[in-house]
Amino acid sequence: MSHQLPDVQATAPDVTVGLSQVGVTDVTKLVKIARNGKRPLILMADFEVFVDLPSWRKGADMSRNMEVIDEILEEATREEAYRVEDVCGDTAERLLEKHDYTSRAEVSMSAEFMRREETPATDRETQHTVDIVASATATDEGTREEVGARVTGMTVCPCSQGMSVARAKQKLEELDVAEAKITEFLDEIPQPGHSQRGHATLTVDSDGDPQVDLNDVIDIARDAMSARIYNLAKRPDEDHMTFHAHADAKFVEDCVRAMAEGVVEQFDHLPDDAVITMSQSNDESIHQHNAHAEREVTMGDLRTELNAR
Image 1 (cartoon, rainbow, N blue to C red):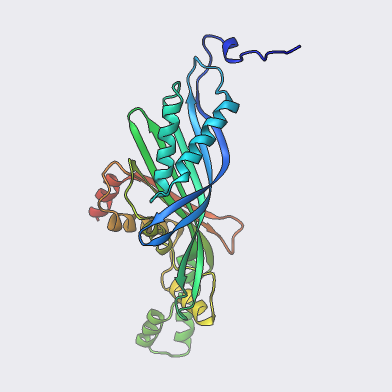
Image 2 (image 1 turned 135 degrees about the vertical axis):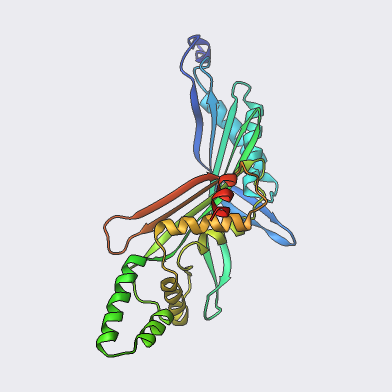
């Protein structure tokens, strides 16, 4: 004797509570990013996919919904794309088309991205890892896409360094070193300060494709800190990193401001309503707490602030 499962949707009440997000997380797919004249990059990307649920609909039919989501992700990632944010945008638009009850579809992805580079002093070939992020939101009014990166670097505390400068100056004075020589020495040789590993995140969000090069996003975020760090470092490279980091000591908020300057300089083509999100977190070396600063701002407001200086 066969038993037919009840239609859950048919038993739903006429009115319930709508939900802003219903979907799936931790869906892993291979993404192929095309490059002009080069072999494509293959990324192992983790996706999160959501649609909204209106108040008149009780459930999202998760088992059937997962089948649709997986099918759409397979279609969107099967062909080569030139930008990771376009993969999210394409997926979000397909979701919106497939779900006639929804008015909003959101897709986000993250993946590790390896870049080749050379060490700063010895010119050894090495690689470094970047966490790239992308997302898209599709509605009947259109699609917004976001692309960005999370990178690591090194920062040095200006306050700690300032105390070292004062101590060095006092000692040199006790040794009867001329004032002009003391000033020359302190200008040429950065004094020690406590250092920390920094984590910078920079994303750009706009209507349609932001039209920014992901490599530029990565470079702006890395250069906003006191110094870049490298996977491979011989002793001359270590000396280079520590010297340059101490020569450009920065508080956590200084790193965010440096990102802002880099964005306005590099991405002047962005429309005023593009949204820039910048954050910096430092793993403090001599404190039990960590430091954090962030800013979310439209490109128009950012231009106005920097041009007013």
